[in-house]
Length: 402
Image (cartoon, rainbow, N blue to C red):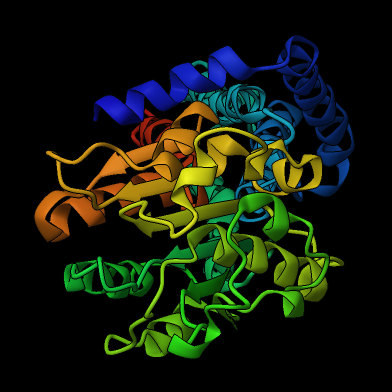
Protein backbone atom coordinates (compact mmCIF):
# COMPACT_ATOMS: atom_id res chain seq x y z
CA UNK A 1 0.00 0.00 0.00
CA UNK A 2 2.91 2.33 0.72
CA UNK A 3 4.37 1.74 -2.74
CA UNK A 4 0.93 2.38 -4.24
CA UNK A 5 0.78 5.80 -2.56
CA UNK A 6 4.40 6.56 -3.40
CA UNK A 7 3.73 5.90 -7.08
CA UNK A 8 1.24 8.80 -7.15
CA UNK A 9 3.83 11.00 -5.46
CA UNK A 10 6.24 10.05 -8.25
CA UNK A 11 3.67 11.08 -10.89
CA UNK A 12 3.39 14.47 -9.18
CA UNK A 13 7.15 14.98 -9.02
CA UNK A 14 7.75 13.96 -12.64
CA UNK A 15 4.76 15.79 -14.13
CA UNK A 16 5.31 18.37 -16.85
CA UNK A 17 3.60 21.61 -15.87
CA UNK A 18 2.11 22.45 -19.29
CA UNK A 19 0.71 18.92 -19.75
CA UNK A 20 -0.68 18.77 -16.22
CA UNK A 21 -3.27 21.44 -17.01
CA UNK A 22 -3.52 21.16 -20.80
CA UNK A 23 -5.15 17.72 -20.75
CA UNK A 24 -7.84 18.55 -18.15
CA UNK A 25 -8.74 21.76 -20.01
CA UNK A 26 -8.93 19.89 -23.32
CA UNK A 27 -11.03 17.21 -21.62
CA UNK A 28 -13.61 19.76 -20.48
CA UNK A 29 -13.70 21.44 -23.90
CA UNK A 30 -14.17 18.08 -25.65
CA UNK A 31 -16.99 17.07 -23.29
CA UNK A 32 -18.72 20.43 -23.79
CA UNK A 33 -18.45 20.18 -27.59
CA UNK A 34 -19.66 16.59 -27.62
CA UNK A 35 -22.56 17.50 -25.34
CA UNK A 36 -23.61 20.32 -27.65
CA UNK A 37 -23.81 17.87 -30.53
CA UNK A 38 -25.13 15.08 -28.36
CA UNK A 39 -28.26 16.99 -27.34
CA UNK A 40 -29.48 16.34 -30.87
CA UNK A 41 -28.11 12.87 -31.59
CA UNK A 42 -27.51 10.94 -28.33
CA UNK A 43 -31.10 10.33 -27.31
CA UNK A 44 -34.63 10.43 -28.63
CA UNK A 45 -36.68 12.92 -26.72
CA UNK A 46 -40.03 11.13 -26.67
CA UNK A 47 -41.88 12.48 -23.64
CA UNK A 48 -38.63 13.64 -22.05
CA UNK A 49 -37.95 17.34 -22.19
CA UNK A 50 -34.77 19.22 -23.10
CA UNK A 51 -33.49 19.44 -19.50
CA UNK A 52 -33.37 15.65 -19.22
CA UNK A 53 -31.81 15.25 -22.67
CA UNK A 54 -29.09 17.82 -21.88
CA UNK A 55 -28.12 16.04 -18.67
CA UNK A 56 -28.10 12.69 -20.47
CA UNK A 57 -25.85 14.22 -23.14
CA UNK A 58 -23.45 15.40 -20.41
CA UNK A 59 -23.39 11.89 -18.97
CA UNK A 60 -22.78 10.15 -22.30
CA UNK A 61 -20.20 12.70 -23.49
CA UNK A 62 -18.25 12.50 -20.25
CA UNK A 63 -18.22 8.71 -20.24
CA UNK A 64 -17.08 8.62 -23.87
CA UNK A 65 -14.23 10.94 -22.88
CA UNK A 66 -13.45 8.73 -19.86
CA UNK A 67 -13.28 5.76 -22.24
CA UNK A 68 -10.82 7.63 -24.48
CA UNK A 69 -8.67 8.55 -21.48
CA UNK A 70 -8.60 4.97 -20.15
CA UNK A 71 -7.61 3.72 -23.61
CA UNK A 72 -4.82 6.32 -23.72
CA UNK A 73 -3.58 5.34 -20.25
CA UNK A 74 -3.67 1.60 -20.99
CA UNK A 75 -1.99 1.94 -24.38
CA UNK A 76 0.64 4.31 -22.98
CA UNK A 77 1.32 1.83 -20.19
CA UNK A 78 1.53 -1.11 -22.58
CA UNK A 79 3.88 0.68 -24.97
CA UNK A 80 5.95 2.27 -22.17
CA UNK A 81 5.12 5.69 -23.60
CA UNK A 82 5.21 7.30 -20.16
CA UNK A 83 8.92 6.55 -19.81
CA UNK A 84 9.50 9.42 -22.26
CA UNK A 85 6.41 11.52 -21.47
CA UNK A 86 5.43 11.63 -17.77
CA UNK A 87 1.78 12.51 -18.41
CA UNK A 88 0.28 10.08 -15.87
CA UNK A 89 -0.84 12.78 -13.41
CA UNK A 90 -2.48 14.87 -16.12
CA UNK A 91 -4.41 11.91 -17.52
CA UNK A 92 -5.53 10.80 -14.05
CA UNK A 93 -6.80 14.32 -13.29
CA UNK A 94 -8.62 14.36 -16.63
CA UNK A 95 -10.17 10.97 -15.90
CA UNK A 96 -11.34 12.20 -12.50
CA UNK A 97 -13.06 15.19 -14.12
CA UNK A 98 -14.65 13.03 -16.79
CA UNK A 99 -16.03 10.67 -14.13
CA UNK A 100 -17.25 13.48 -11.85
CA UNK A 101 -19.47 15.09 -14.49
CA UNK A 102 -21.89 12.11 -14.79
CA UNK A 103 -22.21 12.09 -11.00
CA UNK A 104 -23.08 15.80 -10.99
CA UNK A 105 -25.58 15.30 -13.83
CA UNK A 106 -27.31 12.45 -12.00
CA UNK A 107 -27.55 14.58 -8.84
CA UNK A 108 -29.03 17.42 -10.87
CA UNK A 109 -31.59 15.11 -12.46
CA UNK A 110 -32.52 13.65 -9.10
CA UNK A 111 -33.91 16.94 -7.82
CA UNK A 112 -36.59 16.89 -10.52
CA UNK A 113 -38.17 13.72 -9.14
CA UNK A 114 -40.93 15.32 -7.12
CA UNK A 115 -44.60 16.01 -7.88
CA UNK A 116 -43.81 19.70 -8.38
CA UNK A 117 -40.59 19.43 -10.44
CA UNK A 118 -41.28 16.38 -12.62
CA UNK A 119 -42.96 18.60 -15.18
CA UNK A 120 -39.54 20.14 -15.91
CA UNK A 121 -38.25 16.89 -17.43
CA UNK A 122 -41.48 15.44 -18.88
CA UNK A 123 -45.04 16.35 -19.77
CA UNK A 124 -47.21 17.57 -16.92
CA UNK A 125 -49.30 14.65 -15.61
CA UNK A 126 -52.97 15.61 -15.24
CA UNK A 127 -54.36 12.54 -13.49
CA UNK A 128 -53.07 10.09 -10.91
CA UNK A 129 -52.86 7.41 -13.61
CA UNK A 130 -50.77 9.71 -15.84
CA UNK A 131 -48.57 10.53 -12.85
CA UNK A 132 -47.90 6.83 -12.26
CA UNK A 133 -47.04 6.31 -15.92
CA UNK A 134 -44.82 9.39 -15.95
CA UNK A 135 -42.99 8.35 -12.79
CA UNK A 136 -42.33 4.90 -14.24
CA UNK A 137 -41.09 6.41 -17.50
CA UNK A 138 -38.74 8.90 -15.88
CA UNK A 139 -37.34 6.38 -13.38
CA UNK A 140 -36.65 3.97 -16.19
CA UNK A 141 -34.91 6.76 -18.12
CA UNK A 142 -32.88 7.62 -15.02
CA UNK A 143 -31.77 3.98 -14.65
CA UNK A 144 -30.91 3.76 -18.36
CA UNK A 145 -28.43 6.59 -17.89
CA UNK A 146 -26.36 4.28 -15.70
CA UNK A 147 -25.95 1.77 -18.52
CA UNK A 148 -23.59 4.22 -20.21
CA UNK A 149 -21.00 3.50 -17.52
CA UNK A 150 -20.28 0.34 -19.53
CA UNK A 151 -18.61 2.57 -22.15
CA UNK A 152 -15.44 3.40 -20.12
CA UNK A 153 -15.50 -0.01 -18.47
CA UNK A 154 -15.06 -1.61 -21.89
CA UNK A 155 -11.79 0.32 -22.35
CA UNK A 156 -10.08 -1.89 -19.78
CA UNK A 157 -10.34 -4.77 -22.28
CA UNK A 158 -7.25 -3.24 -23.89
CA UNK A 159 -5.26 -4.77 -21.04
CA UNK A 160 -5.75 -8.16 -22.69
CA UNK A 161 -2.98 -6.97 -25.02
CA UNK A 162 -0.65 -7.17 -22.02
CA UNK A 163 1.02 -10.24 -23.51
CA UNK A 164 1.66 -8.46 -26.82
CA UNK A 165 5.23 -7.20 -27.15
CA UNK A 166 4.97 -3.47 -27.80
CA UNK A 167 8.61 -2.98 -26.75
CA UNK A 168 11.56 -5.26 -26.13
CA UNK A 169 14.26 -5.22 -23.47
CA UNK A 170 17.78 -6.59 -23.83
CA UNK A 171 19.27 -8.47 -20.89
CA UNK A 172 22.96 -9.25 -21.27
CA UNK A 173 24.19 -11.80 -18.74
CA UNK A 174 27.83 -12.81 -18.27
CA UNK A 175 28.10 -15.82 -15.98
CA UNK A 176 31.48 -16.81 -14.55
CA UNK A 177 31.61 -20.62 -14.72
CA UNK A 178 35.34 -20.88 -14.01
CA UNK A 179 36.77 -23.36 -11.47
CA UNK A 180 36.77 -20.70 -8.74
CA UNK A 181 32.99 -20.48 -9.00
CA UNK A 182 31.17 -23.33 -7.32
CA UNK A 183 27.83 -21.63 -6.66
CA UNK A 184 25.34 -23.83 -8.48
CA UNK A 185 22.62 -21.84 -6.69
CA UNK A 186 23.35 -18.97 -9.10
CA UNK A 187 22.05 -21.08 -11.98
CA UNK A 188 19.04 -22.12 -9.92
CA UNK A 189 18.34 -18.46 -9.21
CA UNK A 190 18.72 -17.60 -12.90
CA UNK A 191 16.32 -20.36 -13.89
CA UNK A 192 13.73 -19.09 -11.42
CA UNK A 193 14.26 -15.49 -12.54
CA UNK A 194 13.85 -16.39 -16.22
CA UNK A 195 10.58 -18.15 -15.37
CA UNK A 196 9.17 -14.90 -13.98
CA UNK A 197 10.21 -12.65 -16.85
CA UNK A 198 7.79 -11.56 -19.55
CA UNK A 199 8.29 -12.71 -23.17
CA UNK A 200 9.37 -9.25 -24.36
CA UNK A 201 12.90 -9.74 -23.00
CA UNK A 202 15.70 -10.88 -25.27
CA UNK A 203 18.60 -12.46 -23.39
CA UNK A 204 22.27 -12.73 -24.32
CA UNK A 205 23.92 -15.38 -22.15
CA UNK A 206 27.71 -15.60 -22.04
CA UNK A 207 29.85 -18.11 -20.16
CA UNK A 208 33.65 -18.22 -20.08
CA UNK A 209 34.38 -21.27 -22.24
CA UNK A 210 36.68 -20.91 -25.20
CA UNK A 211 40.22 -21.60 -24.04
CA UNK A 212 41.80 -25.03 -23.74
CA UNK A 213 44.93 -26.15 -21.91
CA UNK A 214 46.92 -25.76 -25.16
CA UNK A 215 45.96 -22.11 -25.65
CA UNK A 216 48.49 -20.52 -23.31
CA UNK A 217 50.31 -18.81 -26.19
CA UNK A 218 47.19 -17.13 -27.66
CA UNK A 219 45.66 -15.89 -24.42
CA UNK A 220 45.35 -12.09 -24.28
CA UNK A 221 47.00 -11.06 -21.04
CA UNK A 222 45.89 -7.44 -20.63
CA UNK A 223 42.75 -5.39 -21.07
CA UNK A 224 44.30 -3.08 -23.64
CA UNK A 225 44.81 -5.96 -26.08
CA UNK A 226 41.28 -7.19 -25.46
CA UNK A 227 39.66 -3.81 -26.13
CA UNK A 228 41.59 -3.42 -29.37
CA UNK A 229 39.61 -6.32 -30.83
CA UNK A 230 37.05 -5.02 -33.33
CA UNK A 231 35.23 -8.28 -34.01
CA UNK A 232 33.90 -10.90 -31.66
CA UNK A 233 35.70 -13.56 -33.71
CA UNK A 234 39.02 -11.94 -32.74
CA UNK A 235 38.50 -13.10 -29.16
CA UNK A 236 38.50 -16.70 -28.03
CA UNK A 237 37.45 -16.43 -24.40
CA UNK A 238 33.69 -16.48 -23.91
CA UNK A 239 30.78 -18.42 -25.37
CA UNK A 240 27.99 -16.05 -26.46
CA UNK A 241 24.46 -17.37 -27.06
CA UNK A 242 21.51 -15.19 -28.05
CA UNK A 243 17.95 -16.06 -26.96
CA UNK A 244 14.76 -14.37 -28.15
CA UNK A 245 12.86 -14.83 -24.90
CA UNK A 246 13.37 -15.95 -21.27
CA UNK A 247 11.92 -19.41 -21.88
CA UNK A 248 14.59 -20.17 -24.48
CA UNK A 249 17.27 -18.80 -22.13
CA UNK A 250 16.02 -20.96 -19.26
CA UNK A 251 16.18 -24.06 -21.45
CA UNK A 252 19.66 -22.99 -22.59
CA UNK A 253 21.18 -22.87 -19.11
CA UNK A 254 23.90 -25.51 -18.96
CA UNK A 255 24.53 -26.43 -15.34
CA UNK A 256 27.33 -28.84 -16.18
CA UNK A 257 29.41 -26.45 -18.26
CA UNK A 258 32.77 -25.34 -16.81
CA UNK A 259 35.49 -23.06 -18.09
CA UNK A 260 39.14 -23.89 -17.45
CA UNK A 261 40.11 -20.19 -17.28
CA UNK A 262 38.66 -16.88 -16.06
CA UNK A 263 38.54 -14.49 -19.05
CA UNK A 264 35.87 -12.26 -17.50
CA UNK A 265 36.77 -8.99 -19.23
CA UNK A 266 37.41 -10.76 -22.50
CA UNK A 267 33.99 -12.43 -22.34
CA UNK A 268 32.31 -9.10 -21.57
CA UNK A 269 34.02 -7.34 -24.47
CA UNK A 270 33.31 -10.25 -26.79
CA UNK A 271 29.67 -10.13 -25.77
CA UNK A 272 29.52 -6.41 -26.47
CA UNK A 273 31.01 -6.92 -29.96
CA UNK A 274 28.68 -9.84 -30.69
CA UNK A 275 25.64 -7.79 -29.72
CA UNK A 276 26.81 -4.91 -31.91
CA UNK A 277 27.24 -7.30 -34.83
CA UNK A 278 23.83 -8.94 -34.50
CA UNK A 279 21.52 -6.37 -32.90
CA UNK A 280 22.91 -2.99 -33.93
CA UNK A 281 19.77 -2.10 -35.93
CA UNK A 282 17.33 -3.06 -33.19
CA UNK A 283 15.80 -0.57 -30.77
CA UNK A 284 15.35 -1.64 -27.17
CA UNK A 285 13.25 -0.11 -24.44
CA UNK A 286 15.97 -0.80 -21.89
CA UNK A 287 19.30 -2.60 -21.79
CA UNK A 288 20.90 -4.10 -18.69
CA UNK A 289 24.21 -5.87 -18.20
CA UNK A 290 24.44 -8.44 -15.39
CA UNK A 291 27.76 -10.02 -14.40
CA UNK A 292 27.90 -12.90 -11.91
CA UNK A 293 31.49 -13.51 -10.81
CA UNK A 294 33.96 -13.62 -7.96
CA UNK A 295 36.06 -11.14 -9.92
CA UNK A 296 39.14 -13.36 -10.35
CA UNK A 297 40.05 -12.52 -13.92
CA UNK A 298 43.30 -14.09 -15.13
CA UNK A 299 44.45 -10.60 -16.18
CA UNK A 300 43.61 -9.25 -12.72
CA UNK A 301 46.94 -7.46 -12.09
CA UNK A 302 46.58 -5.36 -15.25
CA UNK A 303 43.13 -4.18 -14.13
CA UNK A 304 44.47 -2.23 -11.17
CA UNK A 305 45.05 0.84 -13.36
CA UNK A 306 44.75 2.00 -16.94
CA UNK A 307 41.78 1.99 -19.30
CA UNK A 308 38.71 0.07 -18.18
CA UNK A 309 35.68 -1.19 -20.13
CA UNK A 310 33.50 1.82 -19.33
CA UNK A 311 36.22 4.20 -20.48
CA UNK A 312 35.33 3.22 -24.03
CA UNK A 313 32.75 5.77 -25.19
CA UNK A 314 30.65 3.39 -27.31
CA UNK A 315 30.64 0.68 -24.65
CA UNK A 316 29.65 3.30 -22.05
CA UNK A 317 26.75 4.54 -24.20
CA UNK A 318 25.47 1.02 -24.84
CA UNK A 319 25.86 -0.38 -21.32
CA UNK A 320 25.40 2.50 -18.91
CA UNK A 321 27.04 1.94 -15.48
CA UNK A 322 23.71 2.57 -13.72
CA UNK A 323 22.23 -0.28 -15.77
CA UNK A 324 25.16 -2.60 -15.04
CA UNK A 325 24.79 -5.00 -12.11
CA UNK A 326 27.66 -7.07 -10.73
CA UNK A 327 26.82 -9.93 -8.37
CA UNK A 328 29.95 -10.59 -6.32
CA UNK A 329 30.51 -14.16 -5.14
CA UNK A 330 33.89 -13.57 -3.53
CA UNK A 331 34.48 -14.62 0.06
CA UNK A 332 33.97 -11.82 2.61
CA UNK A 333 37.48 -12.48 3.94
CA UNK A 334 39.10 -12.01 0.54
CA UNK A 335 40.46 -8.74 -0.75
CA UNK A 336 38.11 -7.55 -3.45
CA UNK A 337 39.49 -8.40 -6.91
CA UNK A 338 40.66 -5.57 -9.15
CA UNK A 339 37.80 -6.21 -11.57
CA UNK A 340 35.24 -5.68 -8.82
CA UNK A 341 37.06 -2.59 -7.59
CA UNK A 342 37.03 -1.07 -11.07
CA UNK A 343 33.30 -1.82 -11.47
CA UNK A 344 32.67 -0.07 -8.18
CA UNK A 345 34.68 2.97 -9.26
CA UNK A 346 32.73 3.06 -12.54
CA UNK A 347 29.51 3.46 -10.49
CA UNK A 348 28.15 0.05 -11.39
CA UNK A 349 25.73 -1.61 -8.99
CA UNK A 350 27.65 -4.25 -7.02
CA UNK A 351 25.81 -6.80 -4.86
CA UNK A 352 27.20 -9.51 -2.61
CA UNK A 353 26.00 -13.13 -2.74
CA UNK A 354 28.08 -14.92 -0.12
CA UNK A 355 28.29 -18.67 0.38
CA UNK A 356 26.14 -19.47 -2.63
CA UNK A 357 23.00 -18.08 -0.99
CA UNK A 358 20.23 -18.51 -3.57
CA UNK A 359 18.07 -15.81 -2.02
CA UNK A 360 20.95 -13.34 -2.25
CA UNK A 361 21.17 -14.07 -5.98
CA UNK A 362 17.40 -13.74 -6.38
CA UNK A 363 17.38 -10.39 -4.54
CA UNK A 364 20.24 -9.05 -6.65
CA UNK A 365 18.64 -10.24 -9.90
CA UNK A 366 15.33 -8.74 -8.85
CA UNK A 367 17.00 -5.37 -8.24
CA UNK A 368 18.77 -5.59 -11.58
CA UNK A 369 15.61 -6.41 -13.53
CA UNK A 370 13.18 -4.23 -11.59
CA UNK A 371 13.18 -1.50 -14.23
CA UNK A 372 12.20 -4.03 -16.93
CA UNK A 373 9.05 -5.16 -15.15
CA UNK A 374 5.73 -3.51 -15.82
CA UNK A 375 4.61 -1.21 -13.01
CA UNK A 376 0.92 -1.95 -12.48
CA UNK A 377 0.34 0.97 -10.12
CA UNK A 378 -0.80 3.29 -12.93
CA UNK A 379 -3.46 0.74 -13.91
CA UNK A 380 -4.43 0.35 -10.25
CA UNK A 381 -4.86 4.12 -9.92
CA UNK A 382 -6.91 4.26 -13.12
CA UNK A 383 -9.15 1.41 -12.03
CA UNK A 384 -9.51 2.90 -8.53
CA UNK A 385 -10.57 6.32 -9.81
CA UNK A 386 -13.03 4.80 -12.27
CA UNK A 387 -14.46 2.31 -9.76
CA UNK A 388 -14.84 4.78 -6.89
CA UNK A 389 -16.57 7.47 -8.93
CA UNK A 390 -18.67 4.94 -10.86
CA UNK A 391 -19.89 3.36 -7.60
CA UNK A 392 -20.78 6.79 -6.19
CA UNK A 393 -22.73 7.62 -9.35
CA UNK A 394 -24.50 4.25 -9.47
CA UNK A 395 -25.64 4.70 -5.86
CA UNK A 396 -27.62 7.81 -6.82
CA UNK A 397 -31.31 6.96 -7.14
CA UNK A 398 -34.32 9.20 -7.71
CA UNK A 399 -36.44 9.77 -4.60
CA UNK A 400 -39.80 8.13 -4.25
CA UNK A 401 -42.61 10.28 -5.62
CA UNK A 402 -45.76 9.95 -3.51
